[in-house]
Every structure is written in structure tokens, then in C-alpha cells.
Length: 359
Ligand code: SAH
Image (cartoon, rainbow, N blue to C red; front, side, top):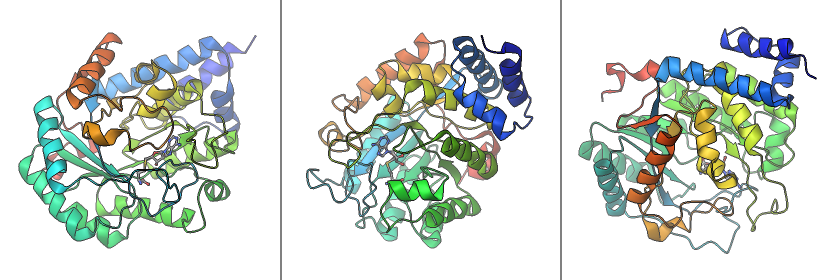
């Protein structure tokens, strides 16, 4: 028997925005009691509904290049994997994905890719301008890895609104176990701070159950999120990819991922929190469970069907064969089935909903 009063008290404390000690936060992370898990999720749902009601925001994900100069040990499209058929979409293809997405009701596009040197600042700026010219009522999110502050600034000035760069882990030693020497924890953190300074809505996040991850690492991740106060947090389970050195490592679990979604919702009540594709990959109901745990964003794939099977960060990725229209239909039905509603809106963070973002 667990001490219900103690554990539920911790959730109440989180909901009331009172800080927990490390000891208490560790207890919230690790308590295996089913009733406690349900209590935590209910609290997270209440907080999300207070700020965002039943609305779920859509982001159209365009995976526009799988070329990458990096070699992150966990990632299927790392540079050192010779078995990837590389592709990059042309400007015309990207613009046409956006047009198609717009007609389907998307008001945010996410350009995600490997760190592909082909996409210089000049090329990115021209692309961003065109997307924003064609769709001035849409938000544009970039997720193209580490760049210099000047580069981030140019892309922001061209019209990009948001930037996703997961911190991956807030522990330097753990970061070094997941990445080659060419990538540094300090530079990743620097990038995140630069992005915030410039004025982007910034997203960070970590994989859940990544190799060698401990509860202490997760605790550090949560402390980092509390301190950095990102507008968005992307978390999903680690899933092994067969062409990486982590191929035999176990995947992260649905239970821990949704537990973290709920805790993050309580720590950052207004955060934009996606129920990710990786969560849908390890459990057919993963994204629904994510929404019921406090997530308020879903990111259906808008990439052309013929390249989807080539953007494989991990094994068994879902939705690699579907058309965009089918993805949005399926996602809308899934969201409605659990009592929420997909909306046609930019879905900005509440701190960014004024004229500020009307560029
Ligand atoms: N190049 C960009 C986009 C990376 S892909 C960048 O570096 O930001 C987006 C995210 O996918 C990564 O940040 C990582 O957290 C996640 N990812 C990569 N490999 C994964 C794997 N094997 N399992 C689960 N998530 C993975």
C-alpha cells in the first residue's frame, strides 16, 4: 500500500505551482501505483484545459532533407549510416507541401531535417520568405539543428516564428555518451539561449529511456525545463534504429513518457506539448494516451509520400505510407475519440498571441 495522501499531495503541490524537492520529484517519477498515475494525469488535463480548453493544435511536419553532417549515436539518418538513401526536397516541392497543408487546414508548418550544409542561410532565408509570403496567416517552425546566432537571427528576420532543438539530455556526461566529440553540450545550450534571445518560441526536450539514462538525468531534465522555460517541449520514447550502435538497447516506455508529459504540463502550465510520432510508434494508442496525459499538439506528416520511408530516425516509424490528407483525417478522428478537438489555428504559445507575432 502506498501512502496515497503523501503522493496525491505531491501532485496538488505541483498543480499549485509550489516547488517540489528533488526527493519529492523523484517519488513522482517513480511511483508505480495505478491510482496515483491516474490522479497525476487528471491534474495535468485540468491544467491544460484551463489554458487551452479542449483544443489540439496541428503542425504539418515537412521532413525536407535527410542529409546530415552529424553522427548522433542514436539517430538512423546520422552521417555515418551508409544504408540511407539520401534526399532533399526542392524549393518547389516544399512550397507545394505547404500549399497542400494549407488546404487541409494546417496553420503551422514545421521544416525539419538533418544538418544539411546545402541549406545555407541564403537558401533558408529565401525559402522562409516565400512560405510566409504565400501563407501570411501561418506560423513557421524550424528544426534544423545547431547553427550560429547570426544564422538564427537571419532566419527569424525572414519570418520564422519558432525553433525546435531538443536538448536531448541536461547532463553533460550523458550528452557525451549519446553524441560524438564534434558535438558539445555547451554549444547545444548556447544555441537554445541564442534562440530565446532572438525572440523565437523555442522548443527543447529529451528522449525518454535513451541509452544510459537514469532517474537522476530525468530529474536534471525537469530542472532544466523549469529554469529555461521553453514555449514548447518535445519528448518521445527513444526507439532503437538497427543501423546504430544502440540497436540492441531497449526502447523507452509509454508509461514513463506519459508520466513525464503530465509532470511537464504541471511544471509549465502553458507549454505547447506534442504527443509525438515516436509515442504513436511504440503503442498504437500512444498519441491518444499522450493527449489524455496533458499534451495539446499533434504533428501529422506532410512530407511527400515517396520520401517518407527515407526519413527514419528509428525503426518501425508509423505513417510512412499515408498521404497527407489521410494523416489529417486519421489524426482528427483519434483526437475526437478521446474528447478533444483539432483546431485550424496557428496555435501560438499564450505569451505570443498578441501582435508580436504578426510579422
Ligand atoms: N537535425 C535536427 C532534427 C533532428 S530529428 C536536430 O538535430 O534538431 C528530431 C529529434 O528526433 C531529435 O532531436 C531526437 O530527439 C529524436 N530522435 C532521433 N533519433 C531517435 C531515436 N532513435 N529514437 C527516438 N527519437 C529519436
